[in-house]
Image (cartoon, rainbow, N blue to C red):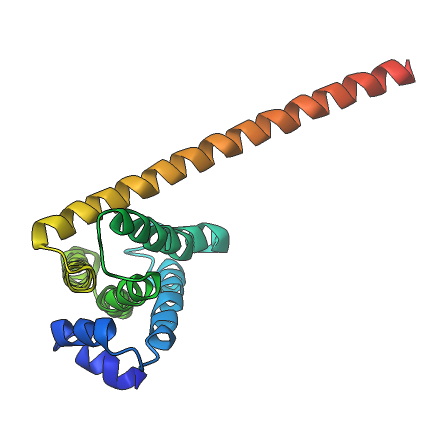
Amino acid sequence: MMLKMLYRLPRHPIDTFYDLKYKKDKKWWLPAIVALFGFLLVSIIEFQYTDFVFNSNRVDRLNIGILLFRTIILFILWVISNWSFCTLFDGEGTLLQIFCLSALSLIPYEVSVIIKTLLSQLLIGEEEIFLEWIVLIGIAFSVYLMVTGLYIVHGYTIKRTIFSILLTVLGILIVLFILTLLFSLVQQFFAFVMTIFTELSLMIGG
């Protein structure tokens, strides 16, 4: 089923997303999970294996935690944020449907990154524009699939779909702001506790 879906999605995205919405018997979560972890995998591959001519990353400083945040964590925030706002605005999509359509929509981007990484081994610096266009096409196709999928599963108009996407991004930014604030407060709290502990130790030792 998974290979059939991956073949069908770019050719008939509307039919595929209607199946996602109305055909409850299919195991959509399996290809969605594969696509999601593929998102992390291609990010690692791009970081490590893009030819040095086109690669501004320090390949000896690969940080899985940062890549995990930029892919899996942000993706989960996207799904939860979209579901939360669309529930308030009469969206018909379930949390699982949003997860599946969002993950499957990442596939064109993932394919473009793989192609870019492979071609980077063959092209010269002056041909970097071709690599950029390949990734831009992948991103555009993924955005098209994402918008189409949300439009179908939520039963929205195009304008309302775009509005829900903007609200989703706003929700993610709010969550990130709160998490950053909490992290800063926790850091300050532990620094305060360590300062008190150090002073007490000096007083007792003195």
